[in-house]
Image (cartoon, rainbow over all chains, first blue to last red; front, side, top):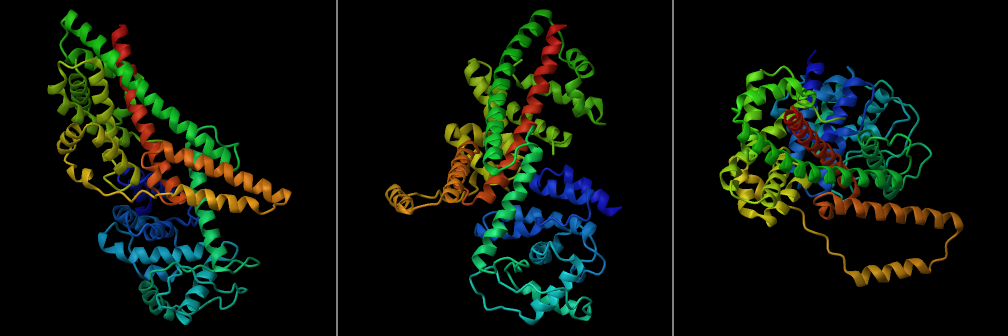
Length: 293
Length: 180
């Protein structure tokens, strides 16, 4: 299935940042999880004044794969890019698409599909292109009305959606509709989402709740990783100077030790991964050569 | 998520290339110099994997460039990523201390109820920790908002993990070889 392969591609691509990959991971395994992923990327690029253009580009490039798995058939937004390809031509459309996705994310308590259609109807009616600096609009949260809107409007709606640059958010039922508090809530949810990912990453953080404790653990973990690197650097040096003496004294040729190293040591086998052994040999040979042997 | 093996391989490749560039020049250098070269090349390799998309990678390259510009340029040209050294960073936010102190005094004058105080204390804790995180992550001070900071830490942690994995496996393999 295209989506399955795409998920793998995403996971192995080092161009993407970790966050994108984790979201792809989640989407891949849990198609019903409509995470507010892409909307954040579009949003963050706007917050930073478009500094991370390269970042968004990769986000845009890889998004189509994600959408292909999770958006439902009746979704009018699919009319924008029906095929899930990694074509760069989809990039621009995806950027605007992400914003509508973000809007959707706000209505977690309502049925998703109904909300999508209802909301797009509303946006078509109340379309504001006045370029107001506020990026968040308040809209009253209504009960489930206008459930099955005609999808004839959908093409028109999607075109108008493409014009806007802002993320439209709807207030939740029973919550303050002040634009400031909505913005705050968006920010808080983004932060908590990222904290969740960090919790998966840092070992031993399942039981810790609360931002302060988590941040503490994260700081400790990063510092310990950095210290480990320094230590590894030290031991590299020692090992290599020791190794070089060995080699010189016993008059070994490069090749033999390398091959034995490859077969005997388990840690290195994680790299082998179906790669031809000759390539790995040459890798390791070069590495040892370059480390001052 | 844990670093994948393809990430490990790519890091190893880039690091190797960097070390090969340094190799001719480090034959007669001291242990200290070689250690620095190893660490520097590892840092640059790690940062170049992201190809300038993340803030920390750009900041890291700039930091290593201030330590040893020549080596960094050499390495980047070796791995064909010269553009990375010119990537611009967001401006550092300047905090005028007098203004900050004055506003804090004003805030403190307001009387607080017990619950509010607890919340304020929690906020202070969180703020202190985020500041600590900014100090640890390269380029942390340049990130204007918390959301971005957390995103960057995520990426940075995974890169650190790949680096440590690769280094550790090499050391293990070499030690196993020596022992026999």
